[in-house]
Length: 231
Image (cartoon, rainbow, N blue to C red):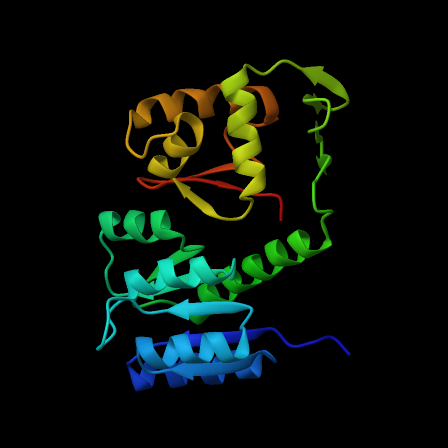
């Protein structure tokens, strides 16, 4: 029998947590609820959930702090569900390590879709070898050992930065990567010219995508960054 995905909801609004709980339970998820940061961290440490749904506006601590604490403990995906809809808040949460961000009010169908994406990503990580040597999806193949990239079985040339950017995106597949995160991974510092990221991403897209009007792999999260899609 397939083991149920265990989801921890950290939310102080009883009506929202109850609504999400009922909806997830109907979808055969195993649900835990923490009504504040302290209780949420206790449940996280005690039951090792597969996914965390986190509200930022908690009564005892700011949810932003919890993202970092959870990420220091494990790679469990944290999906932020918050009334803080400002672009800056989203970027801060994603930079802190959140897997995804949904703004209240939200449709349950959207949350379920984000949960399914997190499940698929975590499954791929578990099934992958400790050191992934080959990445293959649709027409794209990347041989990490030989540092070769193929599109429709034809080898393509990537500059060192384009290749590094491709590796960063694939290693974080499914996750929204902010401009600041990509800058830090590419050049080693946290803040820099995001325009350079856009230029490199544009060049990479032209080399690996078949239809630039409807990209298969590199999706833009407007105002925030990019997401690698291979679902």
